[in-house]
Image: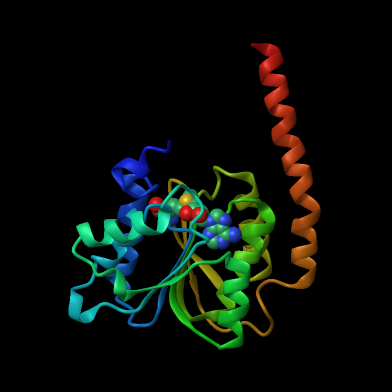
Length: 218
Ligand SMILES: C[S@@+](CC[C@H](N)C(=O)[O-])C[C@H]1O[C@@H](n2cnc3c(N)ncnc32)[C@H](O)[C@@H]1O
């Protein structure tokens, strides 16, 4: 069992968490805050606790809640133990691609997005579509940048094609970006998604080959 399911702590390092909370605290946005992939809700609790009860903006969590047994109840208990009401969180218990389609149809908007769901290249590329719903000046953070190849490749392509996103900072594997203005076209195109689907099996093959070679060497 993963240790955080017992400790209910964030899956981020202390430095990453400090940077994440720092940018939330500094900007104090009042628009919706979104976390894609919450695990035991450790980071969610910390993010919500940046605000006093009376000034907290709406928080949305997208997660299919199948990461470990009883995940949703664990997250709710974690919130309760941290003095935050689970009622305050808009839980969308589904995969992020479906949640995105619904949010896009409703023309929702967000001030802050933390992407930390599935880390395969095509999922990350898909999750980057949420930036379309990010307000100007809004912040998007991504975890496991540089440590997971799928995340790195997807984000680097995103940054090359979307120069209106500027890097605020990168702490360990947490990348923080700011949207400077609305782009003329969607951040992620059909071609980007085809590119990611093409790369996905190649990355799987790479991981598999590395594992086999490692076993042979041992
Ligand atoms: C790395 S953990 C998140 C860690 C958490 N953000 C933290 O800081 O403690 C990944 C989470 O992504 C969720 N997940 C996996 N696939 C997903 C998908 N397609 N859409 C949304 N969430 C997904 C898993 O259920 C899991 O809770």
